[in-house]
Image 1 (tube, rainbow, N blue to C red):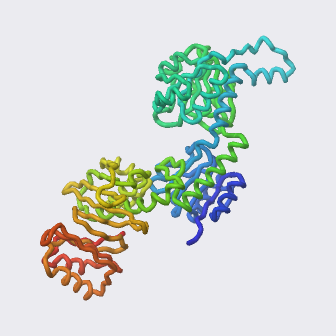
Image 2: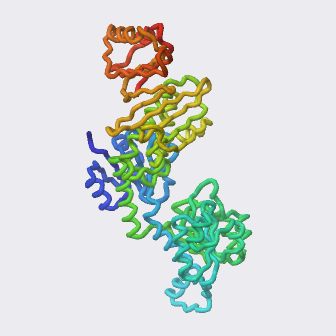
Image 3: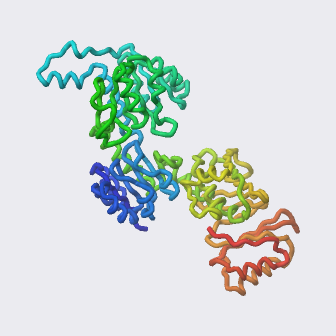
Length: 529
């Protein structure tokens, strides 16, 4: 099997390139491609992975050419330059490195806060111009002041720790911050209105979403404490920059320090040229340590995915650690095949999918298995579905997906039961993975069977009456169809029965009709896996 191929189209540390090579990845390093979208488009179709920083733009148009691409690795936290919906639709995992530059960004926010409080940039320029304007640059102390965090995630929590270390009081607005976590951080959890009214300094540490866009709007800025100072090292667009400029000019806001802007590169901006405003060119992650860390992390993450199936820091799929990947992968395959079995038997619209994890499998990371199950069930109806976009498509189609975890029933150590609720009737089947790692189906319609999945199979529901097996076997033999495995099950003697057969090649329509014409046969379906 050929080695996976990775294209690096932005400047990345040589150590990261070496990681790919040491892991057996065929890597192409061409940092000029990030600025040559046409050349990048002509090359991308030959690669399994794309490693980028901020110069390369993984647009929907580019991804149309990425026919083999499995993963995009962004060395850094921001994925604004990747079309996530387009990547998801194509089944491409998008990873970032959210923790590699956390300390660096947090330190930059603290540095800007100090610089703003003491007017250091302006004082430096004045002094180096030969002036001695000691009385002009009257600063404020930060100790005992209230710092308002908008966002108390990874970076925000580091800022909180450092601010507490210099004697500030820290309050935080974050809908996802639990009371227990707030106590651990040493911060007071508040609503946004309270933060605006109380904070002497506000610093933002949230991603750019429709919910956070202009979170400091003109109306919000009007509610802030007079004399507040505002720091933004997170993302451009979180603050209405024109409204902030007006608030600074009016004296309501004492100053601002921004490292990010709504348009970058920022050649013009309402904040430029104002007194008590400090601007830096998106330097939050610009330290040698951070650049090295994110490059090494993205190389390790992409290698783990391409070689082991491990998924770390993906923004569009549940994580699978390198340690759990070998245990999870067989059950992911089982969930997909079991779902595919039921999907191929379903002829009406699917309303709900219920996946029951029983036994030891319930203690594993089941999210990838659920995505695989949805993919299997819906693929007969939706050819463009994949494990990455499955959950989103199910939601978009109004299909309810439920996960249930239970202790193991009977003598199976682990099993997955999938129930598909369709408009005509529910269908269900149970599967397991034995010590050989091969997915097997062990129950169909409450009838016990024991069958591995094969590329070509025939599924038959029949009456348990003499003559069926002979007639069926004769039809296959006369048609020259070789049987690989032959599995039977029934609910009781003379009752309902199931025949599940693996054959070496796809049976044609004419043969399928002859099978359906056997007197004992209720239904016959041709399946492919």
